Length: 522
Image 1 (spheres, helix red, strand yellow):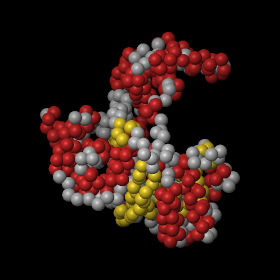
Image 2: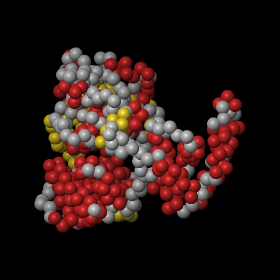
Image 3: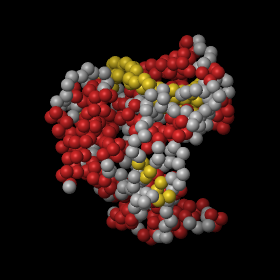
Image 4: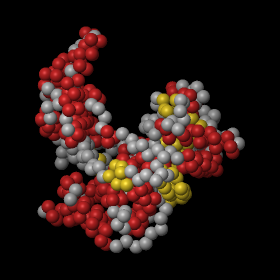
């Protein structure tokens, strides 16, 4: 699963100047020759259908994007949701997995956060004890300590939940006959080599190279291991197929980052007058001093040089703060990438990168990133867990799909939209479990017109072939759908809940948007 950075550093240039591998051993070839197993051959997706209701009479105005995310998190952490999925996983493992590989098969549960891992661990142990099962041992893997907001005064750690097993002992303990299931949160999803791992239960959004690397924990071969199995509670078949397709055959980089963009960002950052050149130079003089000559006083002086910039930033208007923060983050990320793929002879760029990394950490957090307090506002009314798809995900020998390296000047910020909390709950309710009827063309026309006004959509349509353009449009189309929920619930719900209808509607919409944008700009 080569990233763009890997190809930039180690690849050769093709006739068009794009980085390509100097040698190729594809996923397809590795599967055909039996070197690895096809992790998409047995892929089952489930979907949770649920209804949320307001638990209070208040109907506060809240940020729509943030509240939608918070409500989804509320649902994902709800004890009933975790309990139902735990039952599915435990019973599936005992009936379908436990006996495989000579009775040594193991499973991994991929959770979306450390708190999810803690709660799943508690749910697994409770359910296994209630059922009297003696053939499933469970371990959990996450970093640091976790506090559950619903359990005051208790701090959970990996070692504590695992009965004293130390982190370095965890792989060998999991390899033993005492443990069969490993619950993970941002750990062991890459680089973990356990050939007895047969099944993966996914309760986390996966995309791109992360999806490939995570699911590929299953692809190791060992005597008696004939296949693998994935049960996915979150991701659709189309999403996983799009993630794997670029790596099935040859991987290429769609576009190479332009180093001149660093100078544009450098100029933009200087124009805000948040930091002064002398402060940057003084900071770097301490930072780049020989380590053996650095003292605690020097480190204090280094951080003192950041304070004036921090104060000037706080005095800026919120809009200027957001723009500066965005530009600084873009510069740090872009320089970090480019510095690994090409040599630089401009020390000023390196100094700004170093100064910027530390300044970024000192800036006050964006208030918009703080979680919403929805405690007491929402309750779970209805829940159903259904199997959506069962079978194989087939990758095709189609035209090469490109992966992308960082190339943008910072990141684009989404507009904040305020809406009543009840409306947001209605959006989620209608996304899960409603019956649908036929859609009309008017709503599609509104989607197309709004998409054509989005500069990001226009830029992508003009710079990419249709297949690449499609890869970036899935979240945008879904966002347009959700934004039009009140206007036509029937078509929106059908799009969000029926995979076949979604695929047909998505391709038709994207093609129309693509053709009309290019026709209008031609």
